[in-house]
Image (cartoon, rainbow, N blue to C red; front, side, top):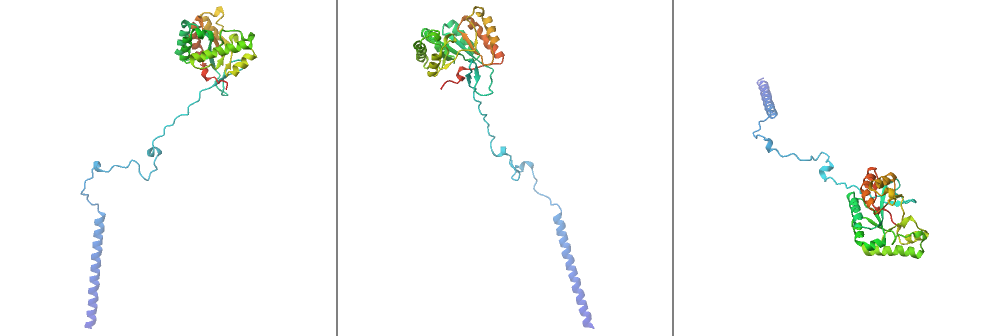
Length: 290
């Protein structure tokens, strides 16, 4: 009986000891969990000034193109200058289909004559940045080579207008050839280049003249709008300007001469043409024979 009682007592003691140890372990674990869960006091004070800077671009955000490479400079494609040719009536027309037809060409015949007329005309052209086609006579170039050089220095184009203004329609082939060749040779000697344009005096010629001009690789032309500055009623600046402006039309190939009244009318003529919305083309933009 004593042995049974002793065994029971031993079992109870061991069970109580086990429960006590388990309770102790449980309380310690709970204490540690709560301790970890409570916020800890940070002994280091954070200052915004001491924070590291943010990166300019975050690695997990797509980088915009401007952040990875410099902006490319786009250079616009230059627009080619328009080129012109002549129609059967000697109007100037654009080579490009659908090109602007509201253009005119200014030509001046029979010079160079004198500084008193040519000088102011060149000044007026320069004032408006207009370039003309001067059809000169060889005989007058021979007398005033310095005036021819002034025309060229102004950026204008020189054309062959024969040596002394004959009516080529009634001239012999030999005479026609001489009139053209003699003038071209003098021009080359004076300004270093042969002309690429030819205009027959009075607008009168024949088949031989046209073929020979073509053989010399010059562009044959007369005009489509004569200023008629040789007619007395137009021999004043105002009358001549009004007459020319009343006839201006798309493609006008305008014929002027080196006269005192033409000199006086030139400013008003140019301003009137521009005010009407026309472009005065540079003869250098006319396509030449190959």
